[in-house]
Image (cartoon, one colour):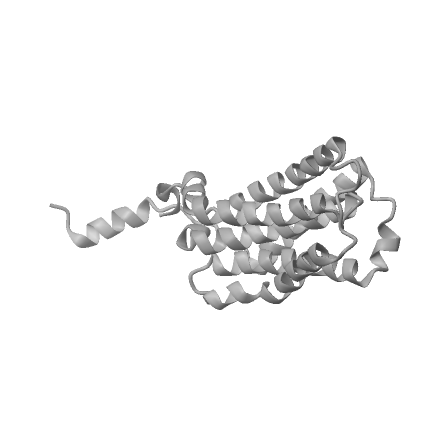
Length: 221
């Protein structure tokens, strides 16, 4: 039977150096830069909506856009912070004020009398473009966050995934408002709110499994 000092020496001899994770704020900033790049590339390929500048003069639209952007930024920061075991779960409340403003604005639009589907209903072409924007924005950002958090997030998979999903949903909603006219129509509201609900629901249900799949326990032990 091997002696304890010999066992310790043999284990220490086979240890490999572990690269420390960058600070959470640095990693959050890198992810947000990627999000800005994705939105910029979509702007080049699809073009901004023709009435964007006049709409930004509308206080309701401007406040809603600001709320969505701030929700995306703060939720991303919260995701990277709570992924570490030494950080308080209170950081989960960081995006709450911005999220309230964003979701309240969506509710305000739902109650306004000028929301309508229009005499021709929902355009299939516009609906397809909205869906394409949603996928092209959310898919790379979700995968990037999953990879960047694969080693730390398994400690708190549900909380981290919910924050990441909220961030992706808010940035996706921002992209939809930037590129597609008719932000006050029921169709755009459905995409905005539906995207948030979908990402949050999937994140809560499958967050732990996703992180276990991309970062097996054997790799992080």
